[in-house]
Length: 386
Ligand SMILES: *Cc1c(COP(=O)(O)O)cnc(C)c1O
Image (cartoon, rainbow, N blue to C red; front, side, top):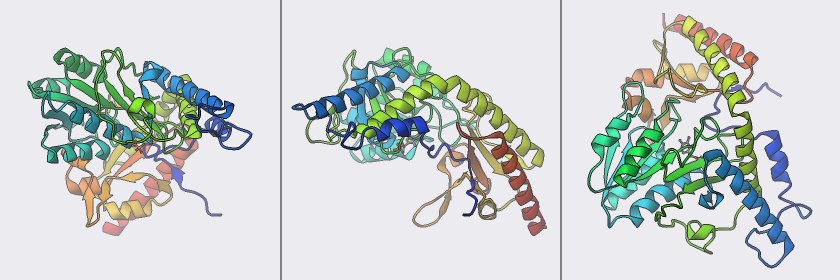
């Protein structure tokens, strides 16, 4: 078998932690917890319900919520849809104005684009050249008819961090709902929805060593708020999200979140050390630019522009390293990343930019090999162009 490329794309998804796989596998077969958690008439159902409720508490504990405030979904995309469309539609009598930023995930931006078609007015905050959204920008954008602010905690391309506590305080003071997309930050940065005055918070399992296909939306209970359900059916999840709960998925997410809470500090220290090693090594190769604020970001994400090399050549030559590129293929063409574009990175540099993302299973050996490979490739490419 051919050797697999070095996996440095943890911001796209993570492998599932072995202990999480073990917990999930107990919820599939006849001798396990396979039943429908909504079955009320037999013990199989009660046991599945207990497993799901235990997992709900594990998710709640990591974000400082009450378990009754956690709504299961299929992932952060669905959580974003439920939060943003649900809050806007349920509160449209109070106002039509919404605030977000230009560097949100597509799951957020596309919800706002749809709401604009429905007659809402959206302000898209412009990030600084360092990829930062400042709370003062939110303060300046708030209007009498603003009903919702939605900002991500950690940016998935840059790793930059928004001061959500300060934005939360601002919004609470003005009676405006505040949604946070925490898909990249849950389990990496401390989150306390109460202390941070967050009303709605999207999370998923697969960015933090849980399975793909499951997520949750935190919906504040006190004071109560209204969001409109986006999926209708049997009235599961207090009517917010119908559909039979996937016991194994919920259990996997709960286990991954509890583990993340236990390992957060240790993981962050290791990842920070490896990230520094990678950054220093790339720096000595020369001709590199680090995108986004480097002082306060999540160290697991390193977005690097390689000057003077062609983006397509770069990604092709780097087939032994699994990373994301600063370009996105649309149906028609290859477009530079809208996040890099929003912070003023010229298209040519965006095309020759790579996002390295490091995680729990990255080793020091992975980093030294990566530096060797990148060094060799840059040398080859420079010979090619001279
Ligand atoms: C991955 C991601 C999403 C989408 O989450 P899914 O669970 O894959 O639907 C949304 N927002 C951010 C910031 C992400 O990183």
